[in-house]
Image 1 (cartoon, helix red, strand yellow):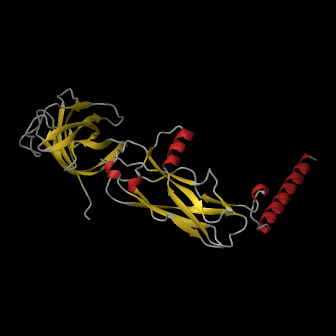
Image 2: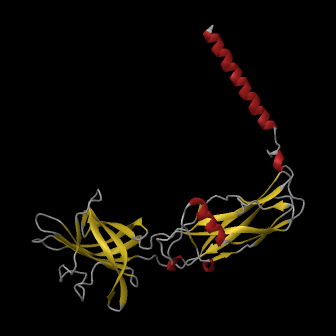
Length: 314
């Protein structure tokens, strides 16, 4: 009797599911709540936070997004919409979420389609824009821009306050993460100098820190390199001091930096003219000059390297 009851429930469930599925397939009408039936709203199709990562270069980056006419009846005439950059929407987002985004400079953003027309019988239009200038901004700052619907040609079309702004975060990628050509060596006291010439990737740790594999020709240790705001003059160039830390596979510190140059004067790269001109980043040549050590009971190991960024040919 229990098995029979179970079979009846299963059959009823299957029949009910088939009926509902068939009803949905037959129903082609739009779902539109009664309280907004007959009304039209112009909205940003994705009003939630969007994001566009920027390389810290002079390049211009294009973007676009969609406006949507929310309505149960398609418009019978063209609808023209005007949009504009809106820093107040960024501030409102911060106030609403507790975030601390900075407004991306309006002078480095252009809305290419500040006025668009949604043709009669359609619902959507595309807003296009472009952004540049990431090379002169601090990659450790969090930037955002907003583009807001300002006006619409048809007074019957309403602008909802919570769906009128396109909010876009503009994070700037670490400017030092790249491929570098490494020329240098490792010294094990009492042994011959061990040169290295290789291409290596410096990977992002945070907005101002990168990590590369290899301590000279020794690949079991990495070097974590933080670019600091402190400067030094090398030749005629203002360079940024770095904190270079040798680490093992678990991230534990296994050494440190020299305060004055230690190395082999007979092996490239050549010693610095001033023994203290080490452990810095030269922004003109895009080169890291590192002189570090890691601990060893047989005598601390020495590394001296010039790491020059490799730029793809244009």
